[in-house]
Every structure is written in C-alpha cells, then in structure tokens.
Amino acid sequence: MFVKEIIETKVNMKIEFEGHHITCNVQYSKRKKISLHMDAQGLVTVKVPNHTSEEVIIQAVKHYGQWIIEKSQLIAKTQETPKEREYVHTGKFLHLGKEYDLNELIDIEDLSEEELKNKLKKFYFTSCKKIIGERIINYQQVLKVKPKSFDIIESRTKWGSCSSDRKLTFNYRLAMAPIEVIDYVIIHELCHLHHMNHDRSFWRRVGSIMPDYKEKEAFLARQGQFMTL
Image (cartoon, rainbow, N blue to C red; front, side, top):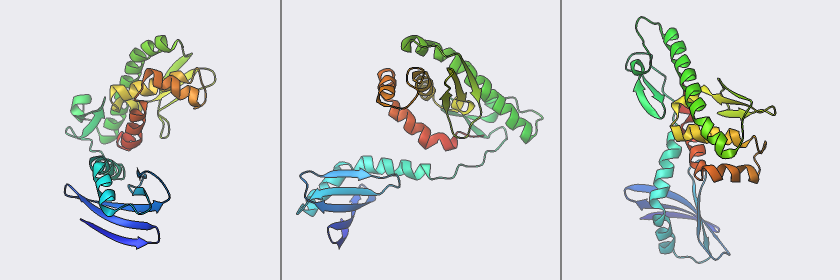
C-alpha cells in the first residue's frame, strides 16, 4: 500500500511493511542505480533513475524494511528524555552495561538521597579506575605505547582525553557501559599517543585493534544520555 504526492521530480510515498508505515522521499534524477539513505531525524530518502516504476521502488524499500524499522526505533529512543533517577533500594542504575537495583551496588541503609548519590558516584569512580587499570595494560602492549598517567574524571562532554604530555583521562560514567565499549575508549585514547588528531592514520590504527569501533561510538552517542546519576 502507498500514498504519493508528486512535486516536480520528488515524490512522498508511504509504504506498508510488516505492520509499520515507512514514509519516504523519492527523488528522480539521471542516475543508474537506486540508493537509500536515512538522516539523523529518521527521514528516508530514496534516489532513483528517471521513469523507475512504483513497484520497483516499493520492493527496494521493503528490501531494507527491517533495517529502516530498527534504525527508526533507535532514533526515537535517543530522542526520549532520560527518566529521573530514584534513589531507593529498587532504583535502577547501570554498571558494565547491565541494570542493577541500587542496593546491589552500594549499601543504602540510613542514608539521605544526597548521601546515596555521592556514595554511588564514588562507587563508579572506583569501579572505573579498577577496570581501566586492569584493561589498559594489554592494549598498551599491543599498541606499544605507555601513557605518563591516567586519571578518572567527571565530564559532561568527553568520554576520554589525551593531553600533549601523554596523560590520559577517562569519564567515570564509563563504568556504566559494557566492557567492550570501555575497551574502545581505552584504545581510542592510547592511539592518540601515536596520532594526536583524528586523521585517517589514527582511525586505521583504532580499526586495526577494534574493527567494529563505529558500533561502540554509536552506542555512546545513542546511550550516553542514559548513563547518568
């Protein structure tokens, strides 16, 4: 099923796929192949050769239907407002990618909400320092680098950093992420000891150790707003 509105060489089309409605912007032009793109807001654009039939367009979109639906759901989730945390024994908090009740992470007896928040933050700082201290050693050996030091900090904007004097920092909130995501940030910052900027050589070095690093970046971009106190 589809509904279309023709505007010069552009068509707005709504296609039904497994109970979902996919709205597409179809653009006709002098081209040889069909291409499909989804932007950060979830708008699907299908670029097709002139005179491409509606049936061919529908089949092309349905071919990527599952991917479109899954990505649309992820985009919708990133636009959700994080829920306010409840500092009670059943309040849910992340640690190493899994959700735990607050009383599974720290002792909560006879503490005020502010005391609980401070105690939980200390828990994450300690956990993050321990995990990174253990895991950074192996990657130092693989990359043949050694930082001058590393520290755990609080930051709203950075997951990690590398200074010109070879000092690394890591955001304490990484303790909320899965181990493989923590590993990515470790590798990322260690690679800066070879390449201080984000040029092609830098990303090749990162990819040589973690080929799927883009998935880890996407996780932080998508889930970072939920990794909070």
